[in-house]
Length: 351
Image (cartoon, rainbow, N blue to C red; front, top):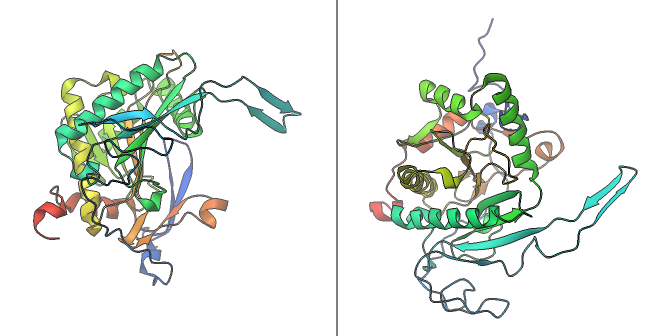
């Protein structure tokens, strides 16, 4: 009987963080590509752009003027998706038409005053300034009685819907626990109640033993392509020590977190020699006043690029109507990412 090969034949893998399944079809990597080819981002940005809404000293769309900031700069989003000062209301008609008001606060986090510096090209100390800003915002937002979850994230690049090229991220803090963190919370709690240990602690121990999907590690964090990854070069950063949120990081862990972010984003840029687009975000315990001893701090990176700087994966058809699907296996993409240099291609002399 023919032996099954996970690198050759279609199979399904379970996402232990959400309980959902994905279809892996490694044999499809051999098919010719005749789909859309998007042009890679080749625009050379200057350190300062006079017409950028986010650069220091410039006027934003709402008429406010940015200060001449020298490091990370944070302000309330001029076009917030969530507003804190709204009336409370709800509707439920026969459990068929259900809605409720949602209070929240949205912040914009400019990583640097420089228009041309992404996280991949910033120094580790500069990234640590960003982490400090995340900590400060998490602390103040989580103290708000209306806020039960704080989502820190970044959409990098036009392919991911970034409306302004100045490197920045966002923080959305809201009354409810959103769907993805809520799904993870359910899985974390189920595992913790059964095993009295952290789901991601046990997972990381297994991954470190197998050494099949690790792309980088330091004394405090592990970066790997998760066994259940959906996006071609999806990664996850997991703290070795179980902590619930960013405020619980020690000084060393904070430095190591900046280091692993720098390495992962640099490897992404080096993959296709371009400023690599992605959506990334930190998943932390809810801020609803409960201890959440089951939660384990981690950060997701979801990049769309598939075969080159100009070909991306689309979530369409089967993915939208059935379940997520990928071609290249997580093990294959992990090996590619692991073997890439940790020196940014713009500084290596190979660009």
